[in-house]
Amino acid sequence: MIRKNLWILMIPMLASCQMLPRLEWGPKPIVVQPEPQIVTVTEKVPLRIYQPPLPQEIDLLSVNFFVITEENLEEKFKEIEKMLDGQFVVFALTPDGYEKMAENFQEVRRYVRQQKELIIYYREATTESEGTTAKEWQENN
Image (cartoon, rainbow, N blue to C red):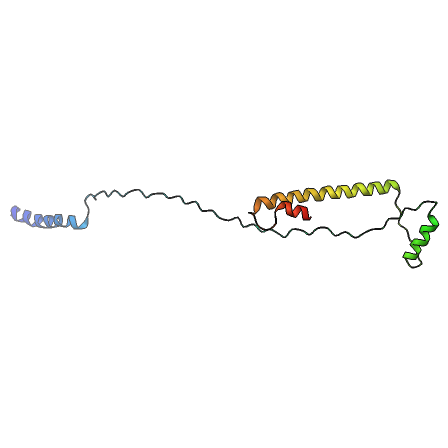
């Protein structure tokens, strides 16, 4: 009787061993894949920085200066009165005030020149040869 019971227990065990390869419980084979190749591509991208239009040159209006002294006071009085339709108005500067005004204009001129140099530097640094060159612009302005 023990033999019969042993066979009854052995049959399901043998049948389950037959299912092992289908369930893939065993060790899996190692598959070696080749390493992917790294490809570096260098692409030149054009620089696209907005370039505002360059300023136009300064268009100054002419100013008339009169030098009035004791000797020509009457003559200049009549000349200015004639220019202003019978009115006489004078804005006067002392020689010291005139010198200070001239120094202020020189300071403004220095500042404008420095700004032009900055504009030229950044324009050349951010553009390829398009339109006018910095020298042409500087000559025109």
